[in-house]
Length: 629
Image 1 (spheres, rainbow, N blue to C red):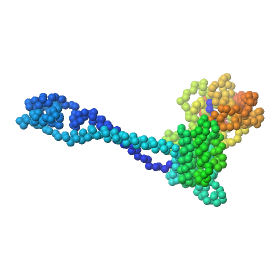
Image 2 (cartoon, rainbow, N blue to C red; image 1 turned 30 degrees about the vertical axis):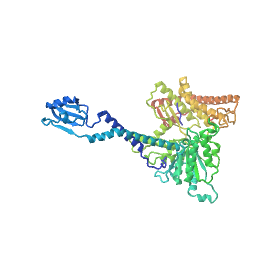
Image 3 (cartoon, one colour; image 1 turned 180 degrees about the horizontal axis):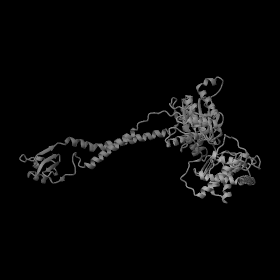
Image 4 (tube, rainbow, N blue to C red; image 1 turned 180 degrees about the vertical axis):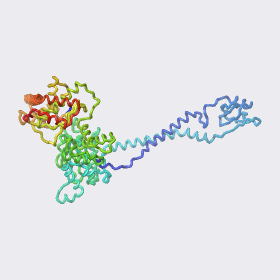
């Protein structure tokens, strides 16, 4: 069972593509070879106009029949003699070398059979040249072609250590600016200062300010780090070099460092400029844990980046903007002031920011008046900017599927459920017994969550399979929360155990459908004990390694607690889970009739909305809520 709770940037300049003359030449060469082979296959005699359909006879026989008047015509082509009988049959005979047709008796003036002599000396001359010289010419052309290809390979080998950074045009048509970036006001303010420094450097240098060497963008995937970098490129109006961290590293040692040197050399020639390194953790991870020691390619690349950013050379007017979602694994030397002077944290958007992001992503989408962006923002807590863009794209696809001219509110609502809960799987047929168990399971979650004060409101209860789940209970917070209390954790654990307890209460046993719920409840209890100090063991954090978990650093480490403490941790976790189970059983026992009534209604409708679910609590007064955890 499952329980769930921009605009395009500047494009690289379009450079003219080189013509692929090598391939064209190769095609011509192959065509010429085919013609040559075809000639020798279909014209083995070496003479034009010959075929293999004529019947061959001795020349003496042809002369005798000619003298007897058996032919209607005779044609002589060099060493070949063609005779056409009165039955339109063509005969072929070969003239002996050195003998003329008169000597053979084919030019008798008294014979009325016409004899035609065709001169083919010119054709034979050109065919001789073709047959003798064409193979030589083709062979020479093939050698030239192969030499050119080898030359290209040599050039590629010499450019192997060159940077692969893409340079973005200053005057691109589809430039991204800060107006295209919704929310993230603090992050934009940090970058606006960098852009202003590039535009008006004298204003800062007069008072002794120095240009920042580096800006590190830190945030979860999809929060808009690359989008911000594109906005900087659009606003700064200076050369902007973009490259991914993985593009530095190659199989051969030293190539990454060579590419770093080449990149910074190009940037210094174009200063002031900006270098953007996306996913810098691919090369910027902590040193000392690699398998290759000091000769590790990744470490050499990182060392070169450190030197280029803050070495002996000063005042280069090159700003490095980097992005990562793993700041915990970056090397300390990379993050110190003088290299990355600023760390810009990009959080998940809050309610107001989500509403602004939605308005940005609907600029090219016709929206119906029924769409309320504030309500959509309230229904999408925890969604990143990329998630919201994907949500509206799904809504547009759904509207187009139903042949609508505008995107309606129902399209957006269905897309929220599809993205947040998974697509409906109506083709997945459940037996009546499984459907009944699923209904009681989901209502157990919803009922306990409704009666406990610290659980989020129930938005929807469904027994239509979604994703991998047979049913879904959707809890939706009314506002964004950044802190969680002990009572909040304990109430959520009770709600998670509610499905398990309802199954056992009404069917006498539990099914595998509760496994994911119990895993989440156990994980919450373990975090309370080990990470948050919310147990009887006191305000002590357990399990902290004190070092990096990168590339096997944890293999030789030990937990910071003894075996005796480990046993106490397990006991404390088990105690919290069992207390939540006892509390859940009491709530369900006190409201057993109400649970059964809601489950029967869910079996009929398959889906209960928030309004339909809350109506049961207005008609039926539930047992008093438990306020103590």
